[in-house]
Image 1 (cartoon, chains in turn orange, purple):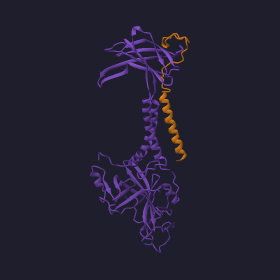
Image 2 (cartoon, helix red, strand yellow):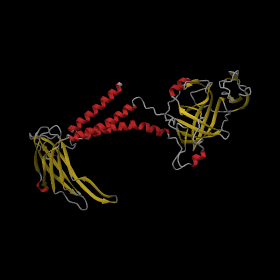
Image 3 (tube, one colour):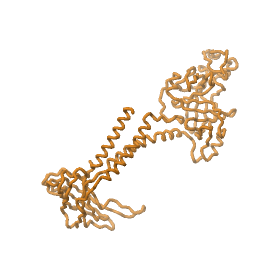
Image 4 (cartoon, rainbow over the protein chains, first blue to last red):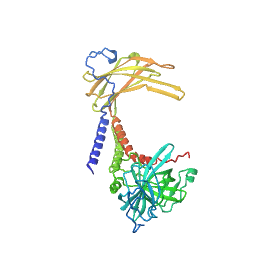
Amino acid sequence: MTPFRVIFLLACVLILGGSGYLSYYGIWRESSDLNTSVRAGSGGGYYSNTRVK
Amino acid sequence: MTRLGGPKAINCPSCAAGLDVLGGGRVVVQICGYCGTELDALDDYKVLRTFADMERPETPFKIGMQGKIDAVEYTIIGTLGMMERWHGMTWRWVDHQLYSPTHGYAWLTFENDHVIFTRRFRRPLTPAWMSTRWVESSESPPVVYDGRERYKYYETSTSEITFAEGEFTWVPNIGDKATTVTAMSDAHMLGFTDTGREREVERSRYLPQDETFTSFGAKPEYLPNRVHPLQPFEAGKNHAFLRNTTLAFTVLPLVGMIFVKGTEARRVVLDSQTFSISELPQEVSFEISDTAKLSGLTFVTDVDNSWAWLEVSLYGPDGAPLFEAGREVGFYHGRDADGRWTEGSPSTTILFRAKQAGTHTAELDVTEQGTWIGATTAITRLSVSADEGRSSSFWLLLCTGLFGLLFLWKAAKPILHKKARWRGTDWTDED
């Protein structure tokens, strides 16, 4: 087994393991349209323009 | 075959240039490379005629070079410039006459920076000859067999001699044309040439390029930039490894997806609750215990050719806001010339990750709504449910796609190479 093959196989295993981990926990798959920068005391709905900020 | 006792060199009787005599006993003419005079090799090198204004073709090989092909030493004794014209296009190549005292005469062809070796083919063929008439009247590409290989029709070409220099076993005439029908197997090409005076079959094959150039001491000016019809596919030492590995890693993420879905253990934490639009805004609470995986808030509406704008705020167990979101839900359908169509969906899901376990509270409202044209029903109710323990197959799907593309690239290479080899065929199924 040449060093290239060893490195390529390791990279494949890492990519597979990484994507398996990300998929299992759903990492970075939260809805992308969530506004999370909301402070306590918000006046209500983000789109009703009554937020305290 | 070797001419015993003959001269090793002569002086051209026309221009007095020194010319080496390299060929064997079958040589009939020698053409001076300096003045174009054709000399009779069988009659004391008497002047036969002169070819004037010949344009010397470009080739890294020259007369007198010696090299080994299949461990047989050949000497280049002649050079022919060749040309084919068809539909306003011109192809040029150079044929070098080779001579070996033990193996006789052959051709070394320099074409589009590729080197090809050609010899007379004497093995019996079935059928024995591929004629232009057969090609023109055949419904499918004509095929001949030599007992070992199957040769399928490739092209019919009419070539013309534009330059001649050195010794030849026949008498080349500048401007002489010959029609050749070629047929190709996986490794060889047969050429069926009928000059009107004689019929001959020659077989060509691709030579190991670097080895041949080095052996003859020739230095090619350019590297080939197109696949030659006879060029074998060079797989590279890691080709099979990369193809097989990428195939395995295309399948493994699919197995991973089955595992991820099989162990997802999604749990409903809020059974579906339905509110009339007039009852909104509303608050719903649910208990989340799994903060490692994704949770989902699913909304189902009764929009029908209409839309509604949902606003959702989620608060964690400590009362701190986790997120706010606004989302349009719209569902449209109808019928047109292509049949029934639908667009959008009456439901939507918000995916989020809880920061801490405990009771979460969602505030829901529909702040805007509208209807489309035709039979429409504005939103009247909103159902909400929540679950936790969600996974996502997205990354494994991306992984399988990535390795799948790499596998296709590797697996397609030999197929694309074979396609490139046959690109020059003039056979079309309409013929």
